[in-house]
Length: 159
Image (cartoon, rainbow, N blue to C red; front, side):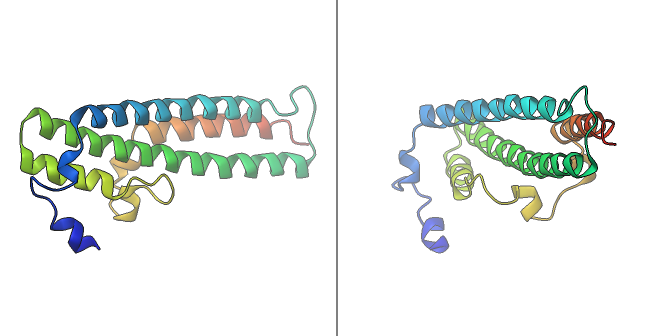
C-alpha cells in the first residue's frame, strides 16, 4: 500500500487535487483544536488544584485525584505534541506552495497526510528523536510547570 502511495506523487495524482485553501483550512482547524485543548487543560488544572479547597483530604482521595489528573496531563501533553507535529507538517506544505515548488509540495503534502491520527505517540517520539531541546520546548515546559503547581496545591491539603 505504501509503495502505491509513493508512486502517485506526480501531477495526475489525487494528492495534487488538494487545493491550497483546504490546507489553510486544516491549519486553522488544527490551531483552533490546539488552543481549545489548552483552555480545557487549564480548567482541569484549576479544578484539580482547588479540589477540596478549604478542607483536608484523606490520603486515598488526594492520591486518587493526583494520579487521575496526571494520567490526563500526560495524555493531554501527548495530544498537544501531536497537534504541534501536524501543524509543522502543514506549515511545510504551505511554504512549498508559497515557493511554487510542486515537487516539494507533493512530498510535503504526502508526508502531512500520511499520519494525521490524534492517537498514539507524537511523530518525534515514534522516531525516537526527542532531543532535550524538543522535550523541554515551551509547550512541554509550561505544561509540566502548571502540572506541578496544581499537584502541589492539591497535595498540600492531604492529611
